[in-house]
Image (cartoon, helix red, strand yellow):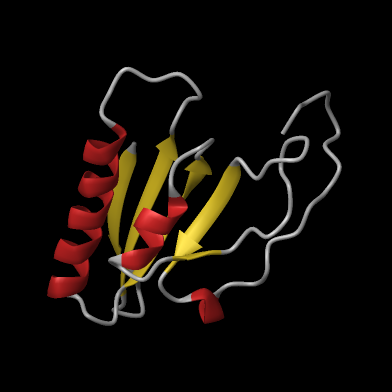
Length: 111
């Protein structure tokens, strides 16, 4: 997980969370979710109008837990690997972003 907080030239605040949650992991998934939620809550407590963007290869991470507390909305509504949606992006301000779209990779890739 990589967390970056930005102060944009416009004066707006943005929290970006990049995450790789592997299919096999050796940590408590609940702790990971709590860390993300706590970081979002802290950020939004300091910057109530701030933008949160969380994305990456989430595999089977429980997105319902992430979308409940800081009101993060999953933006990807199509499969990203086979019949599953493993790659996703969540935000508290979906109106600021274009809808994601699927494109064919130019190299051999299973995502």
